[in-house]
Length: 288
Image (cartoon, rainbow, N blue to C red; front, side, top):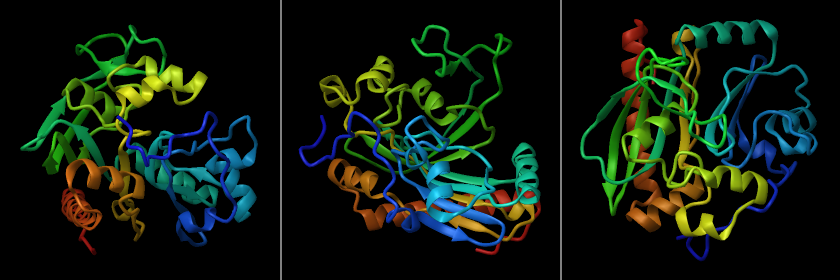
């Protein structure tokens, strides 16, 4: 299913190139470092040295010693990620995360065509039938380990068997978007764990990309992107955006006939509408 021009991932994740790191910086000031993370890079240090993770690359390449990630993104999720440069800012934003005072806007490519917004209010818990411990699934309320989880998928464009959707998170659970998309039977395009065969995840971890991945997945990473983070409800005047990434833009243009400029306009409109609504609910004045 992979297009002939698609660059397949190597057997081992590449190291960050020092010359690329500054290009990913969205904002750097005395309190925050904000990065547009690519969809192949792990956040936390790995055994392969400092340039194999975002945390290590930031320390080595940007000279930022005191850092604290305010939240994490999965390796294959691209987009806005925030690092605090001092303990006071880290503590402040950590509390804001717990109180759900930070606005987030994700966009995703889904299998199938959604024609109207869909609200999925289904608890999530461990998937005990999976071959890896990290997988979650929709479970019955009251099940051991079950957590309330509520996601709203807002279709922005639906064409040729795929949907570009904005995602509204009303709770924040591990793999919430991906697990709810699987339950909805509109899986995240390219998802190795919640996609057509969950054994692809472990196979990729141990063997790298294989012929089975090429046969079952239309893109080489999960098509999930953190498009914007809004700190204004947390009392900090920051609205931080990451543009529609090139790899997902290529897929959407090829498979949906959705031009990158059109997709970006749809994403921007969703971000503005969604985050204005979040600010209004929090009693803040939007300043987009």
